[in-house]
Amino acid sequence: MSLLTPLLNLLDGWRDVFKQEWTFIRATRQAISTLCSSGRQTISQSICFSGREQEDWSADYRIHSQRDWEESQLFEPVIQTALELFSDPILSVAIDDTRCKKTGTKIPTARWHRDPLSPPFHLNLIWGLRYLQASVLLPLYARDSTTPARGIPIRFTEVPHLKKPSRFAKDEVWDKYRAESKTHNLSKSFISMAEGLRAQLDKSHAPKKHLLLIGGGSFCNRTCFRHELERTSLLARTRKDAKLCFQSTSENKNQFYSADKFTPEEVRQDDSIPWQNASIFHGGQFRAIRYKTIDRVLWQGGGGKRFLRLIVIAPIAYRITKKGKYMYRMPSYLLCTGPDLPTHKLIQSYFDRWEIEVNFRDEKTVLGVGKAQVWSPASVRKQPAFLVASYALFLLASLVAYGPSRSSDYLPHPKWRRKARRPSCLDLVHLLRREVQQNIEFQTDFKFNLAS
Image 1 (cartoon, rainbow, N blue to C red):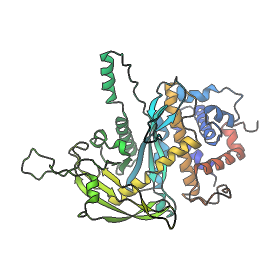
Image 2 (cartoon, rainbow, N blue to C red):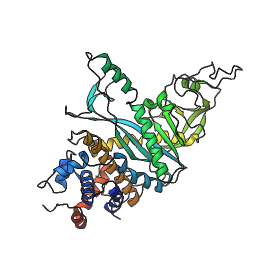
Image 3 (tube, one colour):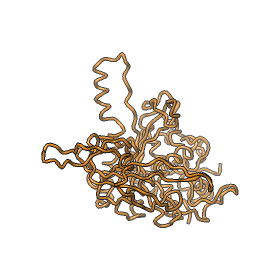
Image 4 (tube, rainbow, N blue to C red):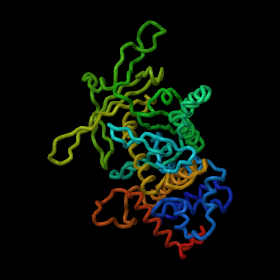
């Protein structure tokens, strides 16, 4: 089975997004051309790959700047196919933000951001755009015990910073800025995305499926933890010195929180709380870990009166060489708003969250998200989401065609590369590029001109 056939079947779900047939054909051609192009991953490069560099190029840009469609519509086939592949009652979704570097000063939403790769002793800044992504975590190890989970993007939304007024601006301008900053921030965008995903699941005939959102420490705050959504829970990494407590047992009805506070670090060091063992898939195989858990915990400063579950994961020992000394990773402290969910599922989903970092690497280094030279506000918002949605359908097509592991259908690896357990994004790109160049019928249907 070819990779191109299931990819076209999944892209056919975009017919409801692009109403006119010629717009759908142009969008499909641009999606496949962008996935297959090499060099600088721009819209112009995708036009050159399809052999249309001598034709009018403006319509390929107008898809993003003048067409009436929303980014979330492109991910509807992704969610529907993901629900069909796995019937787990809990749908784990990793959410994180990322930044795309830019150089143009005329991009309306470009701002200065803190560089996450800057050293701890010196803060660096980057000029670019900020996006918020959600990736559904498919537990492929449930079918193949040697294959890790795979993150499939289901949302990619621009979350720009508000432009800070000049220090010489009037008080009215500063008051307006402070008021808008409370509603236009990363946490509010996280809540909006969670509400959209929940509504999408209900629309996809999966109302009974529980949505588990896994976020980093930036989402462990009052705004995210106090927002309650039906059949939805949040699992986030918390600080080791967060002030936690239990519900008060005092006869005073006005006292809800206990006066005795404790921190996650104190729970880890408390020998009276026993360690529990679990087998978690991580790093290519199932590994034994130790953890502690406490239910019905209250976080007065963050979760308010909402009961939470605290999970403390012990540091994992590792050695760089077979005979080297043992070293330990940092412990993890997690808070979950779903105290009734299985603890093993929560821990496994936390480890699987790493797959969204793999998505970021593929999107930026292989596919070039954020490299397109567009300036209109609509294109800046839509074009990266268009490419991420194409990448998501690309990954799903490989699962439908060849399964989770790397089979002999893919091109052979170079001699110096070790045997891979699953296909990489570059493996898929090389295979799709060869099939597109050999399929004359596909080139005719979607107006490719590779012969020239």
